[in-house]
Amino acid sequence: EGHSSSRREKRVALSILETKTIYEEEKRLRNQCQSLLHVARKLFTHLDDVSVLLRQIMDEARNLTRAEKCSLFLVDNTNQELVAKVFDGDIPGCQSRHEEVGREVRIPLNEGIAGYVAQSGETLNIRDAQNHPLFYNGIDKNTGFKTKNILCFPIKDESQVIGVAELCNKSPGAYFTRFDEEIANAFSAYCGLSIMHSLMYKKVADAQHRSKLSNELMMYHMKVADDEVFRLAQEDSIAPLQIHCDFQNFSFCPRVIENQRTASVMLEMFQGCGMIRRWRIPRDTLARFILMVKRGYRDPPYHNWMHAFSVAHFCYLLFVNVGLIENKIISELEGLALLVACLCHDLDHRGTNNSFQVASNSVLAALYSSEGSVMERHHFAQAMCILNTEGCNILENLDDKDYTLCLDLLREFILATDLAHHLRIEEDIRQMSLDGYDSGNRQHHTLLTSLLMSSCDIADQTKNWDNSKLIAELVYSEFFSQGDLEKAMGNKPVPMMDRERACIPKLQIEFIDGIACPIYELLYAIFPETKYVYDSVQLNRQCWVRANEALTKRGRNGTGNVKDIFQDSEIEEEVLEAIRNVGID
Image (cartoon, rainbow, N blue to C red; front, side, top):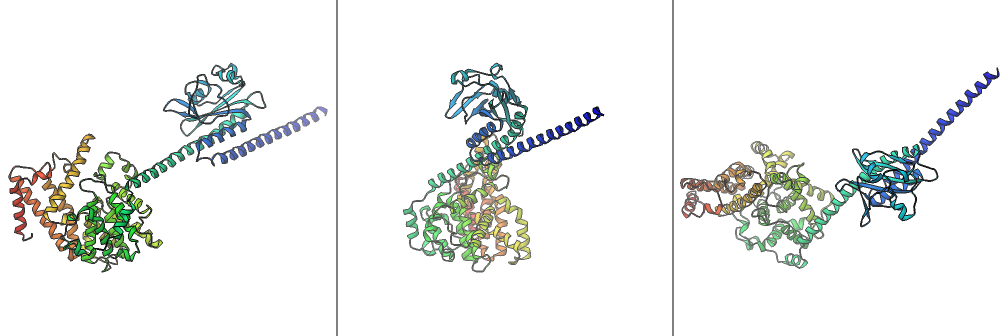
């Protein structure tokens, strides 16, 4: 009976002991989790500064394990080094002399205890540091500090070691325990996440700073002098007939206006369309905006400020001769957005097309290629940049609703200048023309505004033969420059970009047949007032056909510099004869 009672007491005691052990283990795990969660909250409040974060990691690692000192390294795979940016005393376990670079300390990746952990990804718990083969006691001798034991653990991201934490001298205690290893390994997961997020945050912040700096630099070089703005804003208004007797006619070629007068004329187009009064645009703001846009164009042969000015002038002609706003074909706000879009639609054009940007892996392609219309999106971004520049926001007096809508329209209209976009919707526009334009049909209205923008963009094709020749010279000079760049990259340019293969008259005929004629035929079908425009395109086509025939008859294929095509006065005379035969000067 006594033995039976003793066994029962032992079982009870064992049960109590087991329960106590489980309770203590649960308590330990609960405290560990609470400590780690507390630490994690602290770590993720310092993502904006890597150095502060690393200092926080070092302090928390020391506190969690009750170590005397801690060192923290990041792995620099490029230079095969461990880099310490924050310090807690000297660095134990380093066998080589470390190189100080500013406030950094760099150690070879293949040396010492930290190097071993970085390369192996294993945690090292060294109870007797002085007798460990990887330990270097030189620092202890120099500083008087005695390293007794070391716990060194890796910090990892999803795939590799990105850092190493090295703790030394458990206090109190003879060495770091298995529990210290567990909590260090759990802690390292939070460290890895916080470091990776902090480095990513820094990259994003640096990119934003570089972008801001680039914009500031661009705006500095584009900056318009106040006296220049003042002179333009104070100029007396000019009546259209004072600019040129044909200024409001489709036959007028705006390229005859001297470059130095174009800003004044552009301001008067805004004035003549009633934009300044209707939208309460301060005259000095409009003057600065126009001058900034002018500065925002580079100087490729064709896609430059004079092209933008010509496109805006054709928009003005549509307002005057078709009455787009007056007849409520488009709203007043759409009219404002259309004119601004025409002026800004090729801002910062580099003389190369979308395909070249993608093929050359340019910065613009990196930014916009996933969305398509690379250059057009860049042009819109540049327009926004100017509008956001102090003293340039011509939309500042619009109410919030109109302001937002105007920016949406500006984006839509500029993107519509991508000819690939026009070709995608051309059949829909043709069907709309056959069915009859329905002003109440939202899709019809969107198609119409795209057609208007495209017709403005290539309006140079609607002027006289002399202008048509000039534009061909400018366009193909730009194309051939791109072709030369493509050859230098080891690529074969398409024929129209290749000065050795391009037959300019044939290419002009193809462009007129494939792009220009369909656009102005549709415009004429909807707006009979544009008959002259359509007829002019057809006449230019006849001239290019005659030029091609004359060249073919003489055994010349039309390749090379466009100027060479017209060096033969007999060929030019044959073209002029074609013009006289249709009775147009």
